[in-house]
Length: 110
Image (cartoon, rainbow, N blue to C red; front, side, top):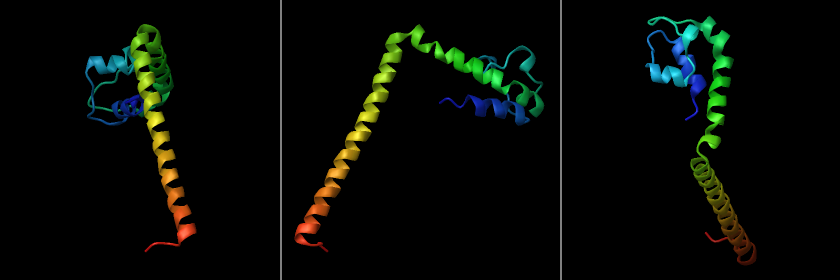
């Protein structure tokens, strides 16, 4: 869901929240960025947050190169969603204009 920054914030600023190694790898919490739990370290969070988010975005940016078929499928789904939203808006606006024209020509119906 692309909530990496929020999860990293929870790891560093909440005392009893800890993740398994797989999640830490995905969030780029590796080597000297790991803190002892239970405990929190907001200073280390402020020091490393931008490096971690940049590394995550670089890792996710290679997605379209690794699997172009999956990237195209997701892109088509997103385009289809936008197209449905736009067509629904156009349909609603047409309906509103029909009602407005009817009211203007025939008078308001109660």
